[in-house]
Image 1 (cartoon, helix red, strand yellow):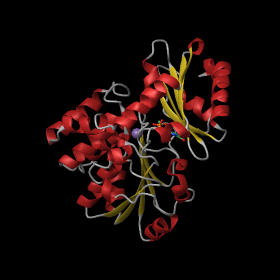
Image 2 (cartoon, protein in one colour):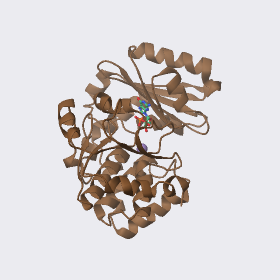
Image 3 (cartoon, protein in one colour):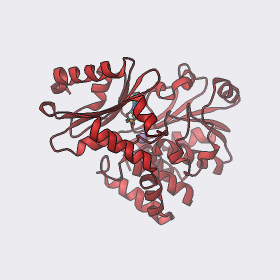
Image 4 (cartoon, protein in one colour):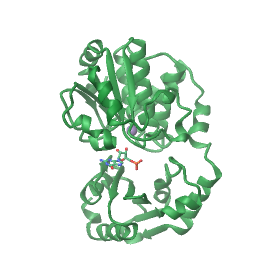
Length: 336
Ligand code: 5GP
Ligand code: MN
């Protein structure tokens, strides 16, 4: 058993046995891993007759609303609702994010947490609190880490809903087992999920084959008209303006995965997508090999994440942000 888990099983069980009411958090713009781990955690607590709520700062993307448990999530949670809940809760659980900023306006609760905090995560540099942190970048996803913790601690729900949630998290965070999935443990977890029983092909269809036509057209538009390649620096980037999003009837979740496409060009090792929002530019970075996308993002674009998958923000306008990106790539590529 991996040390990260082995050393923490007793503390994990102790924390749960001392809890009666738990506030579960995951990051804003939740993905399959965020929602899968949060809903699974709620199932575990329910099995132990522990009350809980899942709070997220914005919405559950429509494309993932089919996931078991998502209808119970307190989306667009306000400070008022959260404060009222926290008053009588005894534990905070943070899943799939390493720094409070990823909870947007709910991050205040982690500035000086009024309760012990349990963090389960697979990002580097997890912020620590009084409580328990079980975090390791050697897991594909928070869902995989959670699966092994639950299995080893005797808390794994033997249900289809759990299997669907955990599988969705693993499948989405690995891009259908394309990256972050070289560990045999990832496949062992999936094998056990299949033994518990769920329809894998149905999940693949729901996650990867249910897009609307306008999303496909937006992707085509981006690749044909909004992609720049800087071959000398093995870099390609794409961008979408607010007008592009409007023209192609953008819905939350539609651009999920778009950032990866330029990485399939031979010789490209670093890619970024810039999406123009109302008051900032949302950026995603991906890389191949040892180019540290998280450090690049952290150095220049107020962000972070994993070695090969990171995100950030820019408060300059889209054009200036793109210019800055090109400059930084040209002057600093070799430092990452
Ligand atoms: P995505 O590009 O899918 O939004 O995010 C990829 C990864 O980058 C996420 O798993 C998350 O770890 C990280 N990430 C995305 N946005 C931010 C951000 O604004 N700040 C930090 N620290 N990490 C981010
Ligand atoms: Mn994740």
